[in-house]
Length: 232
Image 1 (cartoon, helix red, strand yellow):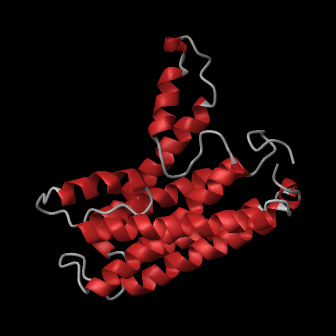
Image 2: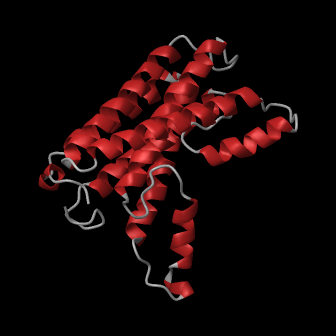
């Protein structure tokens, strides 16, 4: 298979779609689950520090659950990548998409009976954190193994750094500028749409939509001829 950064690869388009779902899921977790991230673990480590210092509004348990279950998701994805990485790319992507979408849809089902203002019932809170964190850990590890430059789908710190450090103002050649800006705009759009949904419609709909985007986007991606070849 040609390098995934080549124009013939369907992966960049898929990863931009997945970046939209990151914004949706961050809206669900931060706005609906009590200031916890399930897609981006840097924030959880910081919040865990706040909680350890007994800062009002921050509690240790949600962050530990998010971190540990994200780790589990990444571990599962590592095993899947080892097993399917040498097979046709579409096999790997379809398995990943069904795994992630299923977890998000189960989380959406749990969210139907969850009350955002009171964060109750507590079992539902931790179930949604667990399901979405496993899904995002799996996603992160899978995308890491796909090695598509500047499209992690969840983290933008290095993307913003790259835009500045590689810019013509810094003497660089602006490599992957459109892709980098696209990644920022995708997460921004997902977060904005997700915020509206969470505030006015609850958590179930953005979780359901996220799973649909993951699955439909992947099924469209694997129709590309290069998806019949191993990723390499």
